[in-house]
Image (cartoon, rainbow, N blue to C red; front, side, top):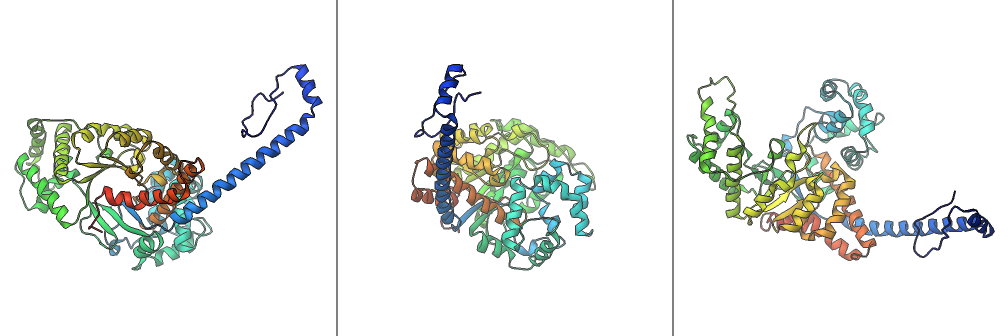
Length: 478
């Protein structure tokens, strides 16, 4: 058997032979073994030199990127450190978010998962229950981020049977004041994090992003009562609803909210069509059909898609007048089951066209629709790519997406990092992976001679700081 084709560096010559007796004899006469050996040696030398060169490029870029002060575009952390859960331990806290989904996907039953969260039971007993699933999921982005975090924050090499008790002691010690500052400022070098929903928050760490989703998609009497309480107004008509919506938005902005956010892709399609006010009012009136229910019974209703569509356009009209940035959840939904195509970012295209003064910050790289998002950001001046959550969803997908975006999208339209965690320790591991991933993408472009190392460093600062600073209009706000 003879080789018909070998991919080799262009400066190396190789003979290509056909499977004929004459060629075989010729090849033997040319001392084939010696030729092949020289070829293999040359190839190995070439690729070793290329790897060494690439590693040096990456190291120089990463040594710059690792020290950058950054802007974190999205978090779900407690608004104040003293609101952090105290009745907890390392397993309970770390498995409230993200990695628990990989464990369940790997086969951990819901019943056993609930047992693992019970911090009244022996830590080792609970670890033994979760260990088989932890080991098969350890190498996911979620698992890697946790190992990175515990090594940097507690000096523990990785989360393992042999380290879990020592790790838990160190974790419990971190519940005292000062841990937020250690993780967010000292270790992660985060200038500011944009915090989902909490208007009242610690301004030394956060700025608020406000949601109006309950105005767009109310479905219980509690939703209505909460809005009436916050606005000190009884809602008797759609007109009241619209007026209060605008008042609440302006109040949020006056308190310090810097942007808007919608997470409704978890509950419905992102396709918001134009609907008349009369059609919307018919849907809104469903609210009043359950008003007779006794106060001890939940008032549940369905306002319908037409009302929701109308309200999204109404809210975007308010944002359009105020020149606000609007964050949209797109792509993968956190959890263990949903309808992914509801969150395809291309479903928002009509909104991009109709509200040109709204800057749309598209979350989570739209994963797995990152190539679709590439086209949207390239096409629409008011569409921006946000890599929040993405680096732990799939580090490789994030690296490859950024490599492609540098080719297809203006570099000022991409924000590199948003932690998107509800517990503090995860933020460190995520931002570290983000810095690694961005450095790898930029190193590939330097290797391909798209730009030099100094330009790569400049771009990294744009991705991690300058771009989100401009996209969220943070001048004078941080």
